[in-house]
Image (cartoon, rainbow, N blue to C red; front, side, top):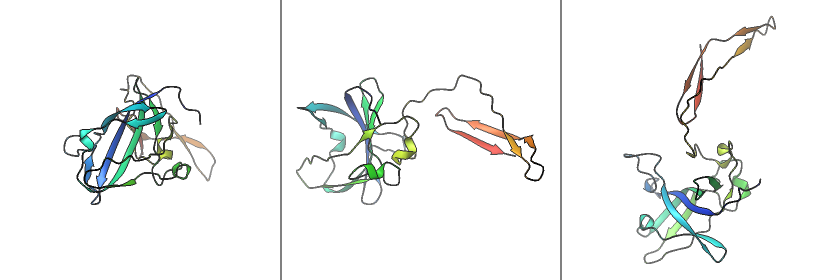
Amino acid sequence: MECRDADPAYVLVALTDSNDDWVAGMNPEADPNDLIMIDIVDNNGSWETEYSELLGLPAGTYYLEYFIVYSADDQVLWVAPREGGAYASSVGDPLPQEIELSAGTKPYVQVDVLCFVPRAEDAFGYLFIDINAIPIENNYCIFVNYCDDETGREYPAKFQVDVWQMGMMVLRWS
């Protein structure tokens, strides 16, 4: 994998608690895709997140669920793979990553990330990565044939296509 040549500017993160409730980065009532944005700084060659009040959580056990690194021009650079994804074995501790917070501490948590590969979101183990929503403005033609196993002939299929703005497409056969 070849990484994009740009400095990281910020990360999008989300955490759950030991009850699997979203505690930072997700607000299901307002927007289920609401991740926390935290700026990144270069600390003598080590990229680190800046302090964020949004992560000021009480002592307890938490799980880092999402960690996606962006450049200043809002392009995904690196992604922390999740358990179950094809890239999970490429890092030492895939997400969700357990974080133990003690009262009065500000721990530094090492997060392994890999270069982002467009169109390989599922390999990172995410159900989705909402990266760059582009409204569909073009017309698309889709042709589908099916083969009759007995005759070997192809016939046009009857189907319906639903396309959403976020790029998801579902074919429904009739």
